[in-house]
Length: 70
Image (cartoon, rainbow, N blue to C red):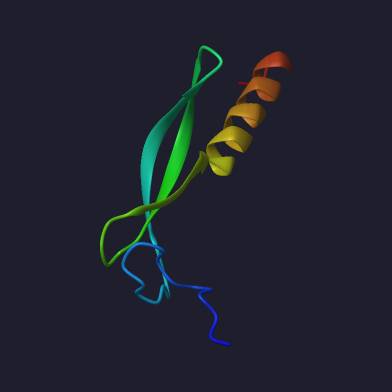
């Protein structure tokens, strides 16, 4: 049975890579830095998430600020 793993659900192109775009994610009255994963063939959005690198960078800045080192 053929697998659909690694294919765009819209255009059925095989995905060897995806494009990443920066977006804002709004929820619970707050805005977070986010990323969307986009098919490079048809530009369909595959997924959106809060940017883990931005979150970890913000956490480090807050910790350094609290320690008086930022």
